[in-house]
Structure formats: C-alpha cells, structure tokens
Length: 320
Image (cartoon, rainbow, N blue to C red):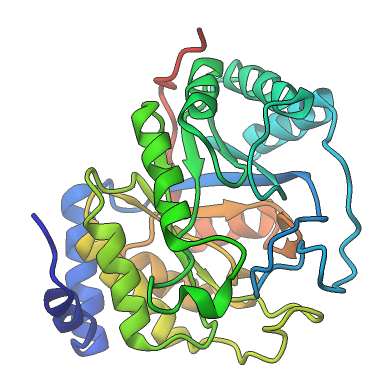
C-alpha cells in the first residue's frame, strides 16, 4: 500500500499513549515481541571525509577532535566482529568515512573484510557512502547482507543539512543496493532543527520505497562540539518515542533500530521505545565516533525488561 503524507500525519498526531499502544500491537503482530536484534558498528576508516554533513564529527572541514585514521587491517576488524558475536550481536556493520566508494585497493580490502565476517555466520552490513551498481554487486558477491545509507531528513530540509550531495544521490545509492540484491538499511536523524512536517516527509519517502527497507535506524542527534549543530538542544524523549511508533506503524515488517542518542536515555525511556515498536539496537561502546552503551549495561537492561537477543539462524548471503 502507498502511504500519503496526510495518512502519516494523522498517525503522527495521535495522543502519545494511544499511538504507543497501536505501535506495540503492530510490533506484536509482525515480529516476535520481546526479541531485539543486536547490531555492532565499527568505524573501519575514521575521519577526513570531504562532505559537509552538519551533524558529523568526521567531516574534515570541522574541528571536532576526531583523528583521521586509514583503513583498519582485516584481522583487527575480524577480531572486533568475533568479540561482538560473543557479546550477542548477530549483525556486524562496518563504516568508512568516505563520500563514495572508489575502485581501489581499499575497496578490495573491504570486500575481504565482508567475506571474513560473513564466514563467522553474522549478517554483514556496510556503510561506505555512495555506491555504483557494479560496486554493490561486488559487495553482494563477497557476502554482504545489508547496506546502510540513511536519508537523514526530508527532501525539503536536506539542503539545510548537507550541500555536498543531493537527496537523489542518496536514493540512487539505495536503488543500486536493491538492484544488487542486498537488503536496505536506511533511516534518519531527528533533533537537527527540522519540523514535524520534515519528519513526516522523511517517513513518507521511506515507507513508499518498494520494497520497504528491511531496517530503519532512528537516530537522535548527538550534538558534537565543532560541528554546525553543536548548539542544538537534545530532542525531547516524547518526540523520539513518537517517531519510533510512527515508523513501526508505517513500516510494519522492518527492523526499527534504536540508534544514536541511546547513551543519553534511561532504561525507562528505552523501555518505552521498545514498547513503541523498536526491535533492534546498536550495542558496543561507540557508534562510529560517538559514545554508546556498553554490551554489559545492555544485557543488564535486557534482563530487567525481559528482552532477549534475536538469533540469526542462518545468513542468507553466500559469497561467490
């Protein structure tokens, strides 16, 4: 079904508790209630990015204290993946601060990393910037399960956040990923000064992708000193919960991922997010370069809330 802006707006504007109750019932109908997928995210190449994303501490033009590092060695990445798996993660995502993938030795090393992590029986995800269809096919052949490429915000608000690429550039990369047969992970960031209409518009775009993304991360802005958004106030938790709930209702079968900003949330606030439809988290002490709850604190939270990590019984992607 195609969602209209008006339909999503009507859902978004429901009383919060009614909205959370509805979203929870959608979650229970379409997913195993109480099961949460744990993903781990590693920055395999940090900093020095030529883009001007206003929220990002890895942009070379901002002075954020993030040191630029070249691509990690495959064995280092593999060790991190093993540790993540031992701590309950079923998906391992590798991020590189690139504007776009280039056909060079670094990309060849990424392909090796994908093959090695895939051999551990984990879902392998990458976020490497813009991607051509032939590059996406190479990643698929190496065993890539998912590719993350966030829309970040609405088309209408996009130029206020980023000027070094267009909204259609992002959608083209998502299309290239789809054509290669890789699952799509795409979401956004709230708390960047956008309006409610922008949040609704972004969800409208995501909900009308055909097919819908298999994974949608919802991030709360982590305002980093040195970026243009360093003075943005923290998003109200009620706005964040509302966004999670609407995402669950309009993307009923997707993994709704509770992502950046979780470090500032109490267990009670996270519990409301799970009740509102979130069924996936990033775990581990860092999300690329920003702080994130450690594995053990998450396991303690799972115990309190009666949650269990979901288990990937088989990884459907076989390297060629």
